[in-house]
Structure formats: C-alpha cells, structure tokens
Image (cartoon, rainbow, N blue to C red; front, side, top):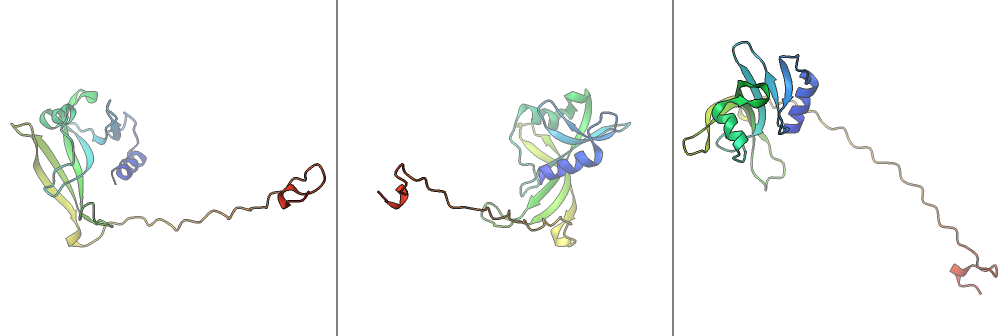
Length: 167
C-alpha cells in the first residue's frame, strides 16, 4: 500500500521544487508529501500502524530526530511530521487481511527514548461502512501456447537413422 500511495502522490503532485505541494525525497531516500506553507510546513508520510496506532518503525537516529525536533535537514527548516497511517485485520496467519482504518497522527520521543503517539484522528473506519474504492485488476491473459515441433534426426554416414537403431 505504501508504494502505491507514493506513486499516486508522485503522479498527482510531481517532484518540482517550485511546487508548494510535492513529493520530496531526503538524502536517505525517504519519500513523503511535502506541503509548504507560509506559517509552517508539513511532511506527510504514509505508514502501516500497529494495534495501538503507532508506526511500525525501527528506532534510528534519523527517526528520533524527526520525531523530537521536527527538523528536515534537506529543507533547513522545521517541518511538522504527520503520518497517514493504515491498519489491517489479523496477522501473518490471515489469508486476506482487510483494511480496518485510515488515520492522521503524529508521534514524539519520550524521555526514555521510545516513540509514542502524540495525537491520532481516524479519518476512515471499516465499521462506519463505505469501503474505500480499490481498482480491480483485470484478468490476466495467458501467453499464446508455443509451437513445439519435433526435432529432425540426423542420418549416419551409411544413410540409416541412428536414432532408430538402424545399421
């Protein structure tokens, strides 16, 4: 889902630095929707969330800096980091997980160095109905059957066919 959202943002908003709403990429190749404003700017990142509404994210210096300082080095400005998060039902054992909710949230770093949810607003939930529209993949057309012809057999020097056991 994450790559699909990034690609849609890229197609819709582009990557031009002249556009105040654009897909941006930092030096670590992290991509997010950058919304540049007069009073403040927002970096919107899409993430899968756990049961508590927190991002599935390993703890790193980069992520800690983004959550604690709200500073995106490539823009040399403070940018509010907001997550467009989504959650699914079940776990690894579920054959077809279902989307349960989509939300906007922000996280911060606790005094212990862990990440915690600062705020979270659900913008869509499955139990409210209105399943999000997802394109249906058209049926795949199988490739044409290859033409297989029998191999020609070579005749030996005496004119008989060696494959047929002639002498």
